[in-house]
Amino acid sequence: MTAKKKAKPDTRMIGDAGEYYVAYRLAKMGITSAIVSRGSRSVDIMCTRDGSRSMSIQVKTTCDRKDYKRWYLGETEFEPSESFCFAFVIIRPDKPKSKEEPPEVFVVPSRRVREITDDEKDPKAKRPRFHLSDEDAKPFQDNWHPVKKYLGVD
Image (cartoon, rainbow, N blue to C red; front, side, top):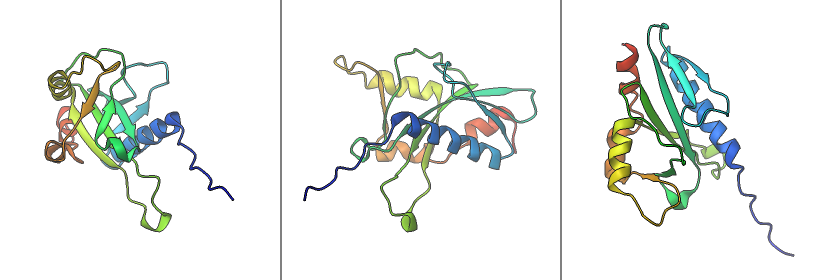
């Protein structure tokens, strides 16, 4: 009898799960959000508290334990600004349901993403990658302050 190989998760489903998880976390903070259609290349979620200001969030999700805290950014250039940030999500679907952990989210302002990505450019890479060491990740883990500050959430 041959052992069955584990099916590789569908990357689109993983990405969707990350977006919905980020939208859920925003809702818990009283922030209204809308997941943008797949046609948008640089924004996954638009959010606001009261409609007076809005913020764009690009969500990048991984569940590959080999590339822990490493995400591909895609081929589209982005313009860093105070009203744009990234939410890097790690989902661990391989845990038994009784031990399932919530996804980890690292909220990183777009200007910081640009700085880190520019420092780590690999000329052989086809797409830019964003990587956080364990030490670098700590200040961003579950830190929604840039979003809350920009939108004026207490």
